[in-house]
Length: 166
Length: 187
View 1 (spheres, one colour):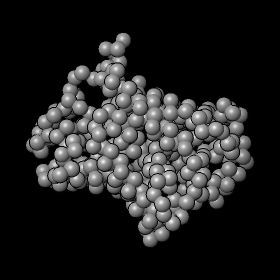
View 2 (view 1 turned 90 degrees about the vertical axis):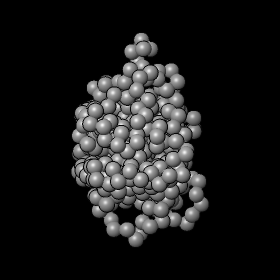
View 3 (view 1 turned 180 degrees about the horizontal axis):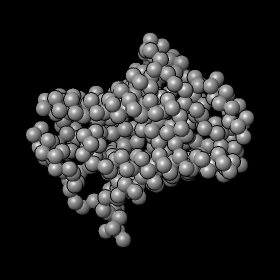
View 4 (view 1 turned 135 degrees about the horizontal axis):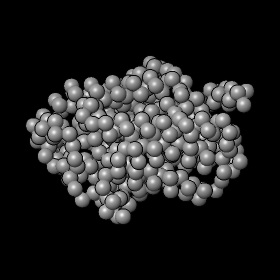
């Protein structure tokens, strides 16, 4: 299994530019994607009901005034960690019988510079990308502007990418 | 039951369920949990350009767009069927601080004093909504992921670059929330 991991790591490395986060080689019809919509729906309900999408909760978090967000993120990581351990240990496959592979993250300076810039944006907007979609659904329609602005930010990054330190 | 579900959900219920998204997406189709990539797919799909960063087969990543559409729909369902009838319960220190900036409406998840269309005409609103949104899009792509891709997915998979990203997210947020945002909010 270790050998298998290494091989997939190598493959992902060369594919970084091609952005192959989606490792599945299967070609399904588009409507197979509806299952991800359903996961998204459950996720969106959780986001709103746990108030993770709240600007106020994010302000509390960055002022160390509440444990709530740390509890949400910390317990989510714990469950994710245990799940991935179980998947690797028992070599669990996807529902289509494909082996599960996760692209490793490679370090570059972007994680520092980009990380700080996103941190600024997160504290200003009180929203990371997921909550942006949820907030629009919750009725704060002006967040559509925030979404368009985030897409514009991503586009400008793509435009400047070669000139930025990585 | 509905009344019970309408209350804000505690972290120890919501957090583990959010964590289950990680194995759910992997088992359903080998998908790594991540949300900020949807912005990139939007650029690749909608904005014609010669930029190589946006030249890839975005149609292969359509699942991600279905996923974020689901998040939008989930929020619609939550506020339509199990809305929280009460104002948000916040740390009194935060309330006291926000009151000094003229933020006094705690009925919604976001301050109605800022998150309305009219506020796009004010400097405060432009900073928070337009510039803040830009930094979220620029920063997450530069960092190669956001709270879901790095903090939850990356740390769950013990990726040290994600730990560095997480530390920088927090550091940037601490600086903004405590030092810079108070200046913006007094605009």
